[in-house]
Length: 171
Image (cartoon, rainbow, N blue to C red; front, side):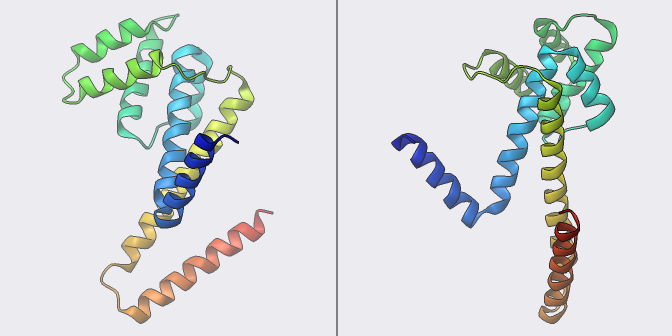
């Protein structure tokens, strides 16, 4: 492992230690972005997104995916320039952000894995898992609001017991 890779790995560990939700969000964003790339390059990925996944957590990715899905309903091939033109013609306030994200995804120098059904299955599983983690954390946070310290401790204890049972049962 190079020094640069080691530094990135250490930074990621520090972030995860102090802000574990950021690690979840980064994993989720990475998986959603990769799925979006696959959708732009493989019609089958679009169909799987629409029929199996149904949506992304990230609003920008979700809106870009919606344009891709709508475009593929009336076109055989995926033409990114035409999708960008559709976004430009839309009345969305954040259309510039969508175009910027779509353009950066297409022109980035990062190499993406080749399309395989297994890759898509792994991306979908990762996205679902990370979305569930976020949902659990949000639900717990909402449950704790306005409660006494004793009540908070009870809720956290029950939450952890349910989580432990679900992990134990999943093995």
